Image (tube, rainbow, N blue to C red; front, side):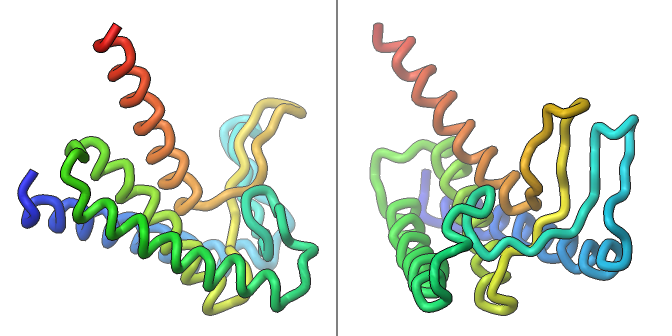
Length: 163
């Protein structure tokens, strides 16, 4: 994959995912702040505003503010820069892996923007059936999950081909 195509793919994924993430978070803040929860599709989808000062499922939310800032803003920024460098310059990365890493970058950037601007990530979606439910998440979390799933699938496919 040429550098131009690589940069174009990374830029497109970042612009689309971060734009969608920030737009949906803004809409959620506007329309869900006055209501406890909205339920759709027979309670399969719930929209409920939550401010997450921690990481995945609130991990680290109880850390002191300085530690949370250092870890979730400064530390994550550093990791995202390393991931961007790897995605741009690694020779052995396929187009599918560039897509997956770009999704990880986009999700990380989306939540990083929240943490820098608000001090927390804006979450608002929850899916499930009956008592079996996910945590509350956002579009950035979906991008990260999609990136991880693509990398897992690509790794498993690579193992099956080499056997």
